Image 1 (tube, rainbow, N blue to C red):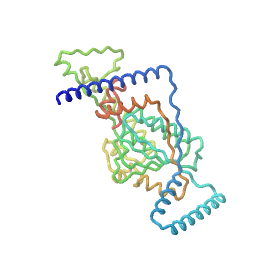
Image 2: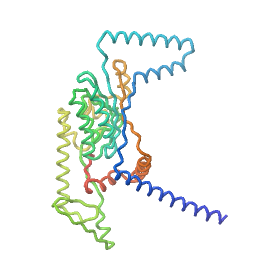
Image 3: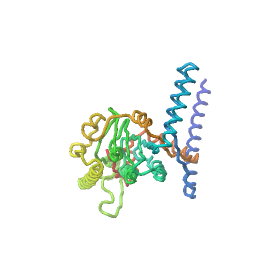
Image 4: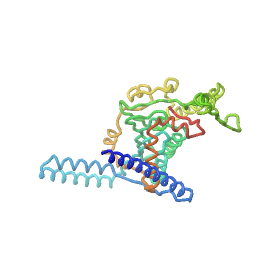
Length: 352
């Protein structure tokens, strides 16, 4: 038994070493492929008719609940109604079209690439002043430049005179609210988190720990404010004052952006960094109504042709493996700390 235990331990160590070596090889291969000028994976637009999806769901339920004779009668009536509806549409003006998009935001607003591609395609066919866009938005916020770009993509829809409805089922806070405020009509579920109009910079400082262990940290720079607060160096009151100045300026720009799209909102009361439920946000003017995205879509499908758009692309196997491993590693630490250390020279700005 002792032999088997020793052998099992040896096998576990060997397997761990092999997995680590394979991961290193995969990462090296991925970097080599990128440096070799490998083309980026091409994606394509995905389209689904939500009216048809709902009709299929209805038919499946009726088939399960009704007896065969009643189901056939219901099916016949539905086909007759659809035929009459098509005939009516041929005689009248075409029905309104609604295009449904989705954005599930992380700290870096990494889905902005998919969003911009979908909007690029949509703007080729959308009819200004006639068609509408609905965005399902979920985001607790993140980095300034990522959410700034995502918000700019939504602003393009407004510029092309497309009525934009944004529905928030769970959360649109910080940079997420920066995107949400662009909507012509902003709806939230009663218990969704809304607000957090503020800016945050945070990072740990290990200077005292290094000093206690007689470890020197050297930093050479040109430019008075190339680096202010640091992770390993000694931070001064002057460094803190400079970063506070930058944070205040970013907060001012954030509030100006919101005022551009929601001029009636009392920013003095709303831009405190606080978060409210959907019901409280409605009372404060941060949203225009209470509804879930499903409730809104079910209602609109009765009066419009509704299409859900997405962007899909197949990444190379190496990229999928490295992305999966990286995501598991990131999940072990708070996103704010991780992103602050690795982005923007250690001074990442976050909407908070």
